[in-house]
Length: 508
Image 1 (cartoon, rainbow, N blue to C red):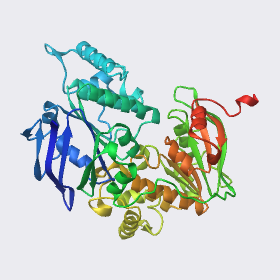
Image 2 (spheres, rainbow, N blue to C red):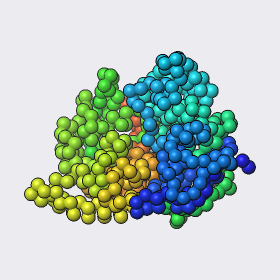
Image 3 (tube, one colour):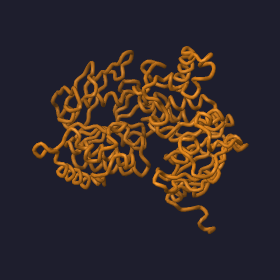
């Protein structure tokens, strides 16, 4: 069997940590090879070595049987290696074509031949059924479409070895299905793929083989067809993992959150949330389901103060918080794990300890008479890092930008849960997390419910919504289609509601 890539005994060190420790990986021609591991296991670091972003301390790389020195991404591209990064490398103000040809501009004399570029991009888009508009601006297209642009960037450069780093972390279930089809088509066309992922279901759907990393070391490579999800999960985290969320029946009591006739307007003057009302009680997880883009994000922005309401009221603990500041909402008893961890969750150039006290740095014990108590902040941050198993090179002093997406997510969840809020809003709480971390976060959310907290959960993962929620509402085109009991519904009914079928239609 021909190997297109051989990474032999690769070691990559950072100060104080061996991120990759004597790891070997072999990619066969026209194979989808999954790279599986916990957050911080070394997957992205290993692939960054292959793509020329890092230079390894030890080991060698062979491409088509020939030893190579990949000192930067340009050399990787010349060798036919392309990479779609977890956080896309696109310029919002540029069009699709401008992003794709950046650094590879076709010239007609001294002028960039935009027509030739657009023609090639259109042909590639049609050939691989990517359906991308070459002239659309990046800022005006969905996240799923942006990912297709990244794929087109690789194809435009004639890459035949493709690395996908957590490609489904920000996609809807429908977009994930489309991406899997695209990957299979790429393989049929002669490409070879390395897929970095936490999601065992996706590995079973598309991968041929799977190499598992744990804390920088290679645990083994298995044939996916012959290996079940439980075995791969155990290899990844070093113990048995439960895929079932264990919880007692909820005992909801007083209403904590009242959303009354809320309407929110889009910048383009149409209603993106239309007359929505619901309640969340103490000791209850209220799940909000729906396909991305149906108003859930804007509704949460309205509740948390990130967006103004056009009309309606938000009542928290019998207090009208409709027009108060975000900071005041936190003081009343709200906490929020946001959908976009970079935009609304973290200050990326701050350390972990600075990020853990963003909401309460001005309160005791973190300040005395206006002077910041740095020792107290470090002690608090160290405890959260230990409790939530945040993997970081320099402890509390680690700059958040340098961490994996999953560990960044753990920092946010640790900070928000530690506030002990009356209302905890969690949006996509396990996006980018491995199965071990998902199991832990789910358990913590259930614990908060059992302490009498009100939880508002928004997730695109139907499994997560059905396993965690005590009550489920489905949003479609800015309206709530109905509320259902998770024990009396199924994915089919939820799917119909997500497509716009109202529970009450037969009554109208």
